[in-house]
Structure formats: C-alpha cells, structure tokens
Image (tube, rainbow, N blue to C red; front, side, top):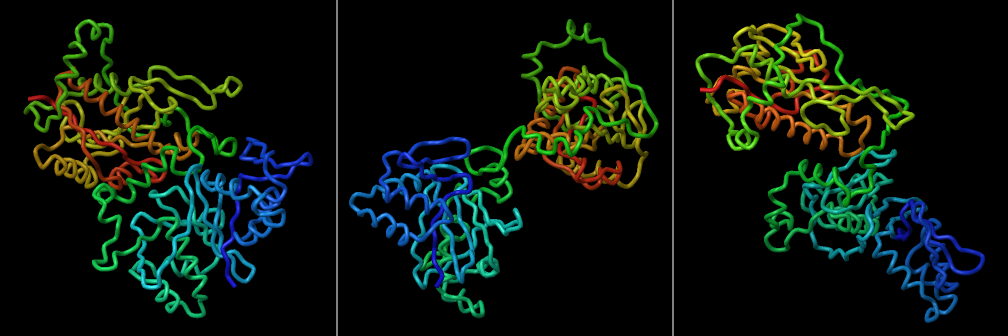
Length: 472
C-alpha cells in the first residue's frame, strides 16, 4: 500500500550522542537536544535516517512511554522551522518528495474531498534539476520532486479542472490512493488551486494583487532575492577555475575606425550647468531640431557617459579575481558588462549605419552601412515613441551576460538591469547638460541588432534602448 513518510531536509541531520540526548546538525551549525527523552531520540534519529510514517514514529516514541516522551514537542519545533519533508512511497519506491526551501514555513497535508476540483496554478512550473522533474512556484518556497511517471501524468492532466476520482480514471492502472496522495502534495506545494464549488473561480484569480502579476515577473522577483528559495545567490564565482572570466573591455570589433572628439573636462567642470538644475530640467524629448546632432556632440556625450576611465588587472592573491574598469556610471562588481551600439539615422559627420563604441580607445567602429536591419531598428524606435519622431541616433545597450554570470548566482540578470538603469540616468543627465534631446525607450527588438552586428543572442544582446538628437 502507498504511504506518506516524514523525513528531514537534506542538509539537516539528527545524531544520537553517547552521553545522552541528541544533536541537531543544520549545515555547519550544531545544536544539542540534551533534554530529549530516550524514546524521543530514537524517533528523531529514525526521522533523520530515511524517514518513517507518523504512525511508525509514534510507535517508536511510545516504546519508552508516550507520556514520558517529548517527541511531539521536538517534532512540532522541527515542523515550524520548515525542516520536515513529506514523501510518497509505493511498492518500495519513492514517488514524490516535498520539502520547504527556507526556514519557518510549516507544511501540512490538506484533506481532499472526492468532488473537489483542482487546476494548475498559472505560476507553477516544472524543470529538470539533478536528474529529477521538479515543480516549483514563486507563491510558496517549496520544492516538489517527482521520481515516478505518475506524478508527471498528473501534472499534465491538471491543466484543466479535475477531481481525484477523474484523475484516477484517466490514468490506466493508477492506484487511487497514490493519486490522492500526490494531489495532496500538489496542493500543499501551492502548484494547484481549488476551484470554487459553485462558480468555478480560482482563488488566485480573485486576488487583485496576484491577478496583476505576470508569471515571469513574479518568478524573477522571488528568485533574485533571498527569502523564498534556497538556491545559491550572490558572488559565488561558480565557474572558477573551469571557465575564465570575460575581459573588462570587449575586444575591438573589426571595421572602419572613427576617432571621436574628447571634451575638456576641466573646462566643463567650470562651465557646466549646476547639478540641481540639470536634475530638475531632465525630461524625455520626442522631437528634434531640423539641424541634426553632430559627431562632435556625440563624441562628447559618449566620453562623458561611457568611456573607460581606469582599468585594474586581476590579482587573485589579493582577492581580485577578474579585470575591472572604472567608468562614469557605476556597475555591479565593477564588471561593466554593458556595450554601446549606435544606429545612426541622421548625424552631421557620420553616415547612416551601425557603429560600436569602443570605451577604452574612445572611438567608433563602423559595422555596417544602411541596410534593412538598420531601417527596421529605426522604424521600431519610431513606433515606440508613438511615431512622434524618427531617431537621429538610436543607442542600443547590449550586455555581455557571462561577464556577470561568471561571478554571481541567481542575481546576475537582476544586477544587469540595475546597471542599465544607472547608465540610462547618466545618459539623461549628460544630454540635459549638453542641451540635447534624450529619450529612453521601454523595449526594443533583440534579433535585429544581433543579426546586424553578428552577435550571439545568448552571449550578447540588447537590454536597453535610448534615443538622442538635437534639441528644438
């Protein structure tokens, strides 16, 4: 007969100690359980060593006298800490396993009425992890591992409202008890939703806040911060030393080199508009003067926003694991993974075409002249403004993704977007100080730039867009 067994999370162990009592090992932390009765220790050790049903644990604890055993006290504490796992076993094999990913989340298995219908949550997803099918959701910090085909069969059938009886009938030779237990785990993991008995409403669709979240946004939000998962997060350097980090600056691209004007920064420090005035005057502008922006203005703009001011080589002995650069805008870990591409529609001194800005040498490399991809990029930018203006210069901010993901786990793309934000603000402030017309765009087309510049989408592709022109 199928059964539900209880166990402990993988990084948690309870060991009996010779002098009496037991020790709770949570990773590298050890806590004594010296007041645990001898029968409680035996039950706790059994819980740690592969698990058992609640009936089996109670029987072990009862051997020393249930009234004298304080096993229920310790079990309750372990449960409230989120250390207990639930598994389904059938015919000597594990079918599924449910565990909490963060402390403080208590699991409980709800009763499943025969006529209660369920449907998959739109926030639930499955993937392969450690050679197992894993189901998760940003709604609850739990992980459901499926180790038998029956769980995957249920996952597919639950895309439409169905009850446990219907599920059992839809799967040949399925044990109804096992199906019901699996449905209990699915429900406890919040990957399925109960349908309202009369109206058929799903609870998550009745929640106004939840209705306004999209799946990918909520997953991204939950996985790039601590609190709702147990995956590595932060500067883990997970690919060292197997993979070398990308260089601080992208190697020079091939093409015609166009040197750019370098402004007198000392003079600008004396003559520039006050910072507060620049900040207050900053606006998005979707209209240009008949006279286009010049290559000199473009050179000053790029010099003041994106050039490399300084580089520092890696020195592992001092903890510097990769080359870094300093530029006018801040970057996560000084990685500076962003690249600047210019699609020129009209600029005095530059032909229409695609250019890459080399921040180390402060020059442009012409990648192509006017072609269909250039036209599509500029037309798409015009559409993004409500067709209010055709770009004089369209700046596509691309990212060398592995520059950040080599160092950071879980948060590399989140950090990338923050880097894009500070670069956009820097561009806004500099263009305002220069009396130019700036406008950031909400999105752009990735494939067209990749095709035009010969970029590998997975290695480097656009993450931000900005338009620049002469001010009316």
